[in-house]
Length: 376
Image (cartoon, rainbow, N blue to C red; front, top):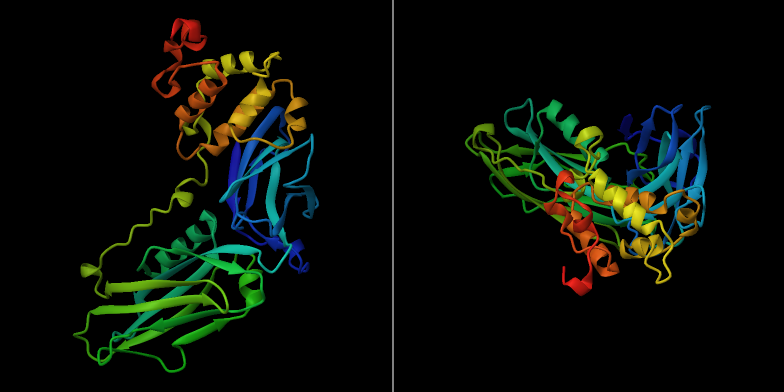
């Protein structure tokens, strides 16, 4: 199976000012392969979904290279299911292909999450030091591309990246270098503050956006640089990057980037992907697919796993529980946390087993089916 993330622009969307690209293109395949049961695809996005200021759409690329809408993520549909999390959208699909997320801002309060970072490197002129400040959509693919480009240019990450909440309110982005040590460094004239038009940031189409600053040492003996980088949207959010570094590679401290959302993508595939052990999955499905007079069936399994809308989609599946578990696996690829599933099952009253401590050969029927009356 093929899975690829392509941080390239959706060319067919560039002329439509109302739509904004919120994700990379994600391809799964091969596209002509038939699937018999829905599979889960995770698409990272950069929208702030904590409030309802976006109308987000799932798009699929056609064989002609154009893009067609599959559904709005809030739609009720029996052909596709979307579950929107803060940094990713988990989609249940029945066909392979290339997918992406776009968004229409409903109000000026719609927010894109930008990752801001600063890289530095020596110039050809031994007295100059270059700073490059990047503002990219907050997805792993976009920032990984920046890191790769900087590595080829000899750039060094000088501070752990931060998130900037950029509103769709038409105000521009301003980037400034502050607190440069006097008598040690000076910045080239007219470059201390740079402004980026709103449209270039809002409709970046995944092209890395950056501003360059050139600093000059007064003497070659100066090897330490400290300053602040202020990135702010006018009448909006602001972030400060603190630079404290040696310009000598031998003395420079390496900044390691540990952001959780980056470590989760792209998801592992094949034998390394997180999976619920097969025998556990089979028994869960056999138990919850069967209608129960007390309501302890797949609908409660969905509810306990925070799946509360568009349940008609699962009702059309031959094994609703299996599809729910596919979605649960997709949401937990980064932590492989079986205990949370065990807790959900305990609350329903079907099992008391701590699944994360059990391997497939260890699980038998008495482990899975227990009786509260027996105190097991």
